[in-house]
Amino acid sequence: LIKEKAKSDVDKLFSGFSKTRENLSVVDELLTYWNLADTDRVLDDLEEALLVSDFGPKISFRIVDTLRDQIRDGKLKSGTEIKASLKRCILELLTTKGSKTELQLGFRKPAVIMIVGVNGGGKTTSLGKLAYRFKNEGAKVLMAAGDTFRAAARDQLEIWAERTGSEIVIDNDKKAQAPSVLSQAVKRGKREGFDVVLCDTSGRTVVVADWSV
Ligand SMILES: Nc1nc2c(ncn2[C@@H]2O[C@H](COP(=O)(O)OP(=O)(O)O)[C@@H](O)[C@H]2O)c(=O)[nH]1
Ligand SMILES: [Mg+2]
Image 1 (cartoon, rainbow, N blue to C red):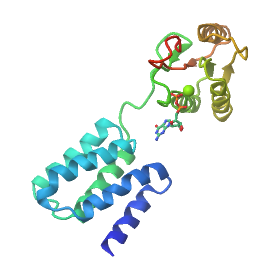
Image 2 (image 1 turned 180 degrees about the vertical axis):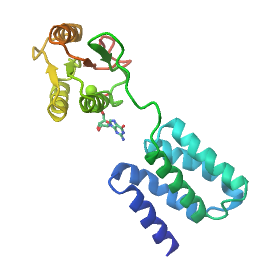
Image 3 (image 1 turned 90 degrees about the vertical axis):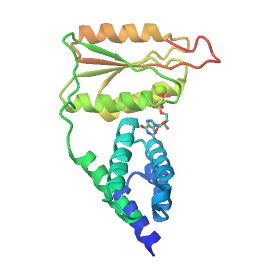
Image 4 (image 1 turned 90 degrees about the horizontal axis):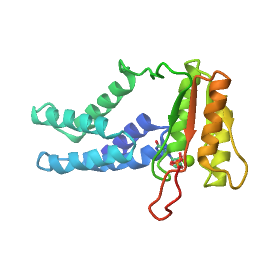
């Protein structure tokens, strides 16, 4: 019964985040059978569960440190209390706004942002999120489809441009080269008074030497 109740609590908190919820279901197991002697192991596992659920290292460490302090001070004596405290920590993070959430574009127009990183690391998705954020702040956004390696990458970026109401520069030529697409985009950004040019790239892999911008 306790396990079921705990599961429904966690489910309520994380409904809508299906991947995250799946990863966090391990927290249920961890805390249901928690006892004081297991604290270090359980907190390590909890930290891992938070990390794979996209909480980010800084936030995950902060949450686990808070719980560790509360356990050490005798404020939390059962798995249920730890779970309640975990919920409070997460809710607090979600509801308190940081003071520095505003994105700084710098003084030159357009600001050029190039997203780089390993293949599949979330570059294009992050670019879409940035575009959404900049649009909401009233900026005129231009995207540059600099991932010329994967044909589908352009389509993926086009969808983000539509979703966010951004303009996009694409070179549909099969032999299109990333530097040429990006330079076309920056030139257009200058000419047409865009506030920001968001450059997508193909990232890099160790096995394909020239798969990079
Ligand atoms: N869980 C999770 N998945 C993400 C996140 N960002 C992107 N993804 C997923 O990771 C996969 C690769 O993302 P994509 O943006 O195409 O990566 P890219 O190859 O670096 O451009 C996609 O299935 C995305 O939905 C994130 O922050 N969390
Ligand atoms: Mg991509």
